[in-house]
Length: 205
Length: 174
Image 1: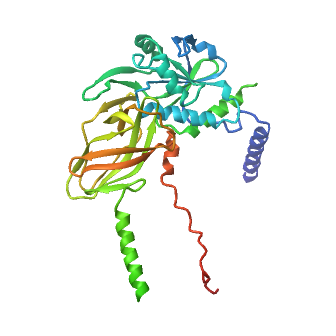
Image 2: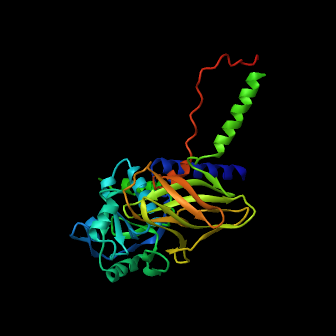
Image 3: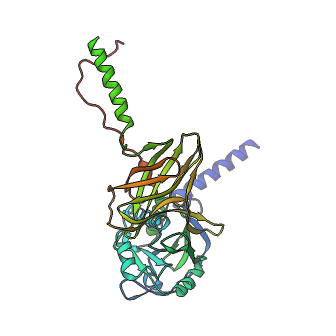
């Protein structure tokens, strides 16, 4: 009895080892994403919004590459700059494939975020970051498929006049224009870098 | 004997000197100690973070602040609601209970600098005057750190090791 069990155990171990050795997906440990994975990934509609370059920008322009989308505003001194800095840190940590990651900052405060203001703000982080600023109602429609939300809030007792509440998540759109991953506010730059590096390594150049 | 007296006097002066003047990253006044100070600035606005410790016997509160590098300084709080929506709002003051401490950090309470008067770079130092209800005004210095969250944990750089040549160190005999 023992002999049979032992042989069976040995056989299983051999199969696993051979399988792993062959790089068989069923046996090799899969990469575990650090961000929140959407399963299945959510197919996203295209959108078109004005960018700081003066030309309209369409999400489909970057299809085939990875897009990191964030909805925020430049007046925000705390949450938004921190997120942009973390994104920059993650991207700077990539050994290769940087050019296939597009960071898109969509303003939820078009009144204050004119193309000039937004482009200056983003350039301080990285001149390659894309800034989109357009009619607030249009932006809110664009945010819906991401489950993202923004609203102007009167700020009594502040020279700001108003502030904008907004979803603070970072959205990762894969090469097929699907929402694949989300990162909550305060995510670790290293986690994002790791996920990006994995995704970039999956594409055949 | 003379050397001992001189040494004692020197020590007393050193201790007194250490109490006076603003330290690079922490300040004390009227029972309130401010530590772990750091700032972040964008082209528009900025935020200053710090920890208050109230070692005094009465409750106190931060009621305002001002600085030359920004037009207006306000106290704000960011809060995430149950839908992961970040809401920010001004607060009239930040209470610091007696014997307690309050930490201003990203995604939470912060001193908001509105309308930067100059573009700041990492490493720049901002002079900020805080006003406490009981402790009164206190001027602190905040260094602009890189805004990535992980890097803010660097805190104080350790003082350089003392490499001054000494006479024999006198290694113990093994």
